[in-house]
Length: 597
Image 1: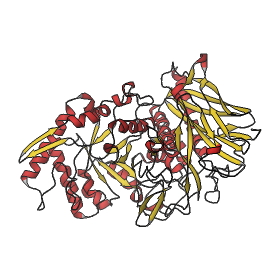
Image 2: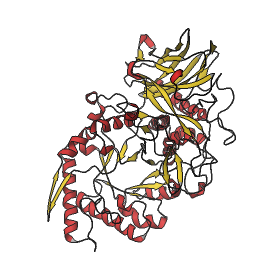
Image 3: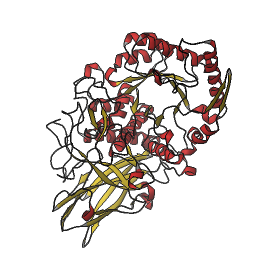
Image 4: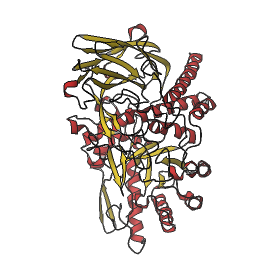
């Protein structure tokens, strides 16, 4: 709508709008012919300018999002955007903390991420960090003090809107909810209608897309700040995979003593689920549930770094009876501690010998088997999962599979037939690494979160996990987050430079905020993980074939592996095709709900 120097329009959560051109950064049909293009300012998957309306669909216990684009010329110096509540059946309101507004922060990409020159959306200013307004407060743009001056007469900013639909049917009965989003400035005001159609079913509290995002920074944080990261992850339907929380350990000759007090003080709230309750200020999906799994403290030395080994490093000449006695006694005490409380027993335990991470030689395979057998002697086969990471060959896995429960396979080396074969032998597969390989392996970073790629590489994690019946693992979510506010390149390795690698959350303290700051890419991950729950619900309702058909209609080929090195046409590249599949899944589940009523 155009009025007195201001124009506002809306779009969905699967694209980003350039503050310089007002067009989608993903409007690059020179890269993929099916990228979104055309007159999307007038009409797109969620927006109809003729009716001045945004239309959304959601289940209960789900977040849905859209973006409001605010275009202002030089005659307007300040504007504010407000959306307080949506009102639905019998006057029931969705509002307060369940309606969140975010001001986007822009980062300038100056060069494409290494090896992705053909797929990069190119140089420009990218909206990414989402700075929240206080509950019930508007987003205010002061264009006289704007972060980026686009031109003397034109400015463009985006407001991200999150709406959470409560799980309780009495708090969000099925039906249509409507609210008014307003943009105000000195001498003028515009309004658009936000319409939300809530289906009569809820997404589960549990996270059914198996996996985590590996992290080494949280345990070095103040516990109160660490808690906020865990809670933000839970609201976005994943969990941090924190490497090696460790209790205090004392070993005197053959005597072993473990002091669990500091360990429990830090972690009990995650193991019993209280971290995700009102006691700690939590709201959202997964209320009161413990984390799904935890990495146990065990590790071996890596090269000359013997300090990383726990409980003790292997002697230079190889294992001794004394060494094995310490490992087995420590393992016994670890199991005893976790078995002492029912809540701890529910959390899956994983042993990951990181010192052998992605090691491809016979000696390493022998050590993996040895440590697996040693831990099984101490804690019992089946009480924990022994994990290995790497794109191992058939021959290597033929040797390793009797000792392995969880295989984190690099996407570069992922083979659907191979993982299916070893799944039948008891090895659960998760994939790890980039989603698309335009030039072959180049697996220099386990992240697939590059800022200058489209958001489908983030949303696609959940979809690929469903298609492959596999879990996922990613490397880090706040890598070099302290420089990310002003520097797009945050990963440099052997002259490799990547934009926004392993970065889903920004450090809030850099801008004076007490909480971590989410990114648009984090929201895209959440969208994919929520989509996964739709497919899971369809399977539970006896419609697994329908779920598979929806996913296969979007993801054309079985992703990953050497067969797809150089194949960039993995899926449909228009996010509205993905949205249409989710809406179709919701309609099918709504039909099931109506039959059961």
